[in-house]
Length: 112
Image (cartoon, rainbow, N blue to C red):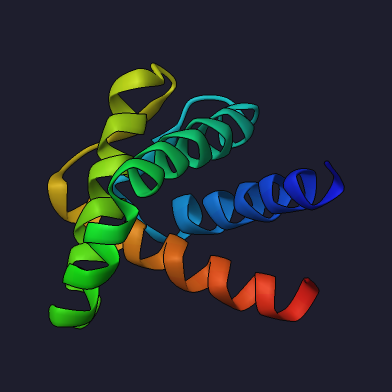
């Protein structure tokens, strides 16, 4: 349970950093970062859990491009599901997904 909570808190910090750096991503309230992190994690786990084997194979072939597109799609779905989170354009979703991946990788390697 503790690793799951740590992952969620790290992702919340990552979401906050990403929203700060990408002008097209907006949160109406401070609590939105927690909800975005939670919904994003759940959707990401579902998508990668269901299609994981196929996506990993295609990700190797496309040098990670498909993973970036899938994470962008998950961020888009998160935008659709959470009313306090707004992405102004597809470019901000693509850049946001890339930064979320990068910051998550960086923080998890430093902390966990």
